Image (cartoon, rainbow, N blue to C red):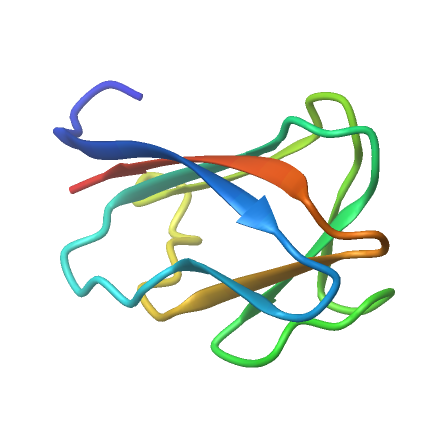
Length: 95
């Protein structure tokens, strides 16, 4: 994660209904999402998260990374959902 100032590290409890993971940030240059649970978590960028759609993050350390170097940084709000709820998603954001 070089060349970024880390603005925050958070642990989000993802529910069985769409849960806000990260608000929009127009200065975001880096985002790492790590599934620290035993269940698949699904992401939606800019809308309501739903099971079996969007970006799937596998359990037990599966991750999704966005970097300005790769050109895949989404600066809008991100939501997540899991089947049974109460699952932890680790979020690291850099600006």
